[in-house]
Image (cartoon, rainbow, N blue to C red; front, top):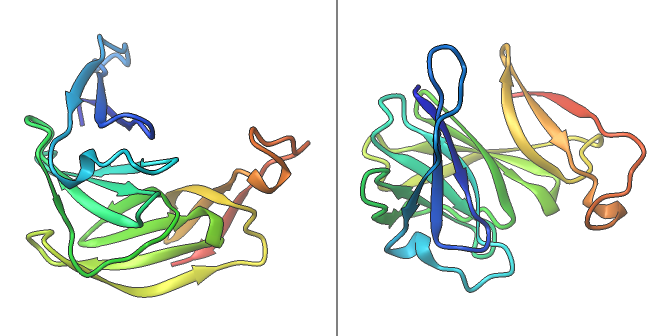
Length: 170
C-alpha cells in the first residue's frame, strides 16, 4: 500500500520504492535475499512479485526453476511454496487466496489455490488463449484477467510493431 516492489532477474535481491500519498516516489531500498529465493543459477531467476493484503509477505516466482517462494520483506528470508511447478513463471497476481502465475514461454496462466499459511498450493486450472504471444504479466480487469503480450518470439528485445493486452476469463 505504501509503494512498489520489484524483482531482479539476475541478482538475489528485491527493491522497494516508497510512494507518498501525493504519488511522489521516494528513495529505493534494496533487500538482500536468503534461502531458496536467492538461487541465481538460471539465465533468468526471480520474475514476478505479489504482496499479501497486509504487506507482511511477498510471493515471488523463479523463472529458471519454476518454483514460487514466500519472502519476508523485512529480512529477505525466503521459503518454498510446496506442491507447485510453474515453468517459465513471470507475472503474478494474488487475490483472495488465489494466485495467477503467467507462464510466458508456455503461453498460459496457471490459477493456483494457496493454503492460508502460504506453505503449499496446487495448480487448479490453466488458462490459455490463441491470442497469447508470450504473455509476461497479468492484472485483474473486472471479473477477468488482462495479460500483456511481450512477443519475445520476434526477438529479444522484441521487435514487433504492435503490442496488445489480451483479456481472458478467470
